[in-house]
Image 1 (cartoon, rainbow over the protein chains, first blue to last red):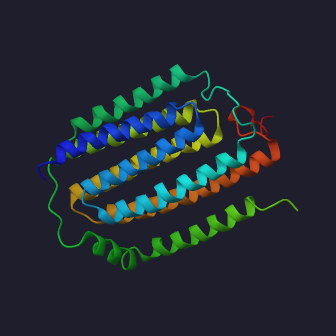
Image 2: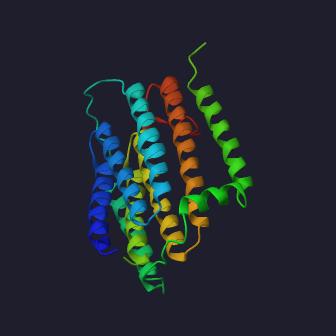
Image 3: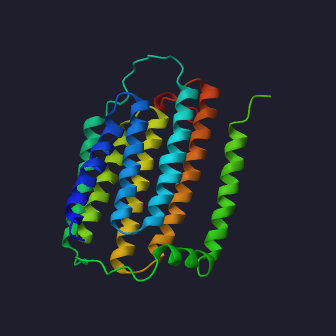
Length: 164
Length: 99
């Protein structure tokens, strides 16, 4: 694809910018909205990598589901409207140092590896391949996933039940 | 774009999320940082799957997305429960288990 570098850099700016806004935003509600943008940007990266199904799942589950329940949680737990306490703790310099060190370690490892510089063309339908894989070779993890989701659903309902 | 570019992008998002987890006071803010970190992992999985020409990574991305959503739902349920018990969601004040 010829326009791929342009799209990639635009997505990088959107993703890194919104991720920084998520962690630095003073208002938690704004942080959630920035998270929605970051998750949508990730869906864009999936589209760029020709994984359309995953982009759709990302938008539906993450940008739709997670953002909605986080907004719910903020509305429920925000006690005083307009309360202005500082959102970050005093360890901000140390945390930045640790994050930069981890980033430098990962990047210096990544650039030294002899990794593929171009990806193979898509063979057949990736969505069909995912569906077939989930229902044949990976059917056991798939069923366990269903069990996990039922357990998470029951647990969330149990925790959030009204007081007796 | 090369695989390195995608991996570097994912590493940047991961470290920003790590920074958020370490600095946020609000428990929900910490959860947002964790979401960012898991998101970076998904980018890595999809990039490796596409550059390696194997569909397994894409299937595992479906799994990680579902597990992350369960984690977010349960984590927020715990936050709401904590708020009900302690009337606060600031991580500094949640020291019930401190001896």
